[in-house]
Amino acid sequence: MFDAYFSAVDSTYSRLSWAFAEPDLAGGLHSTTYWHAVSMDGGFLREGPRVVQREVKAQLAAMETVYIQLLKLQALSMHPGMPIVYDTNMLNHWQQPGGIVWPTVLRQCGIKPRLVRLVIPMKVIDELDRQKYGQGDLARKAATAIRYLDRVLSNRDSGVPVEIRKDQATLEIWPENHSPRRDGDADLAILDCAAEIDQLLPDARASVLTDDIGMRLRAQQMRLRTIRLPEEYRKPGTAIGEKPSLNG
Image 1: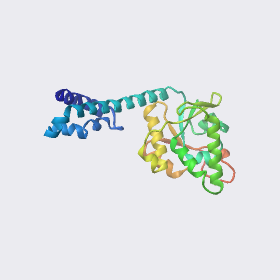
Image 2: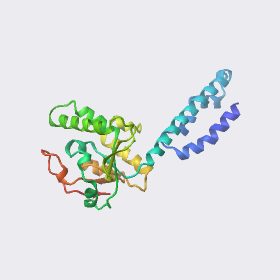
Image 3: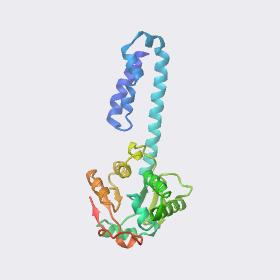
């Protein structure tokens, strides 16, 4: 049994380490149980068979979880459109996604007009939910954005796009990617979402929609394209920024 266990770990480790960086399934194979089995101390030899059986079941469960996640990613990759990932400020300070003429925006950015796939990362939902409990104009705008998303995406699962402008744009919430940065830096969590989409759909060329200079600089370092909206779509009472542009 021990020989079969070691052989399975060795053959599986090389395959998983080649295919996965995160989650680190290969690293998980070299668990505490594995190293106890390698050392073959007396205590482990007495309980070894039962411990190894539990370990194998745990590793199989972890792989089955990732397999289900891969099937979901495969389904996400089948949806049409050029992915555009929303930054939080674009929902607060600019018109709602359904009120934007996206072919015109793409043309002004030098992109051939086509169906756009607007993506709201889970971190953006977190940010809006936090902001709506604050004070002043930002809280009001965040609450308005949350209500808009709830109305448009009501009863829809994450990752299922909803058409918001016929033959122009769909809108969806991107499923949780379990990025550790979701609990910390909001910008990095949003950029991680865009990077994940870009890796999943390299030919679609994912873009980040933002008017934040810091976000654009960070996106450039991650080789992500950024897009700005024309000023006509900015809500009244916000600062006038740069002209619409495409970076990356």
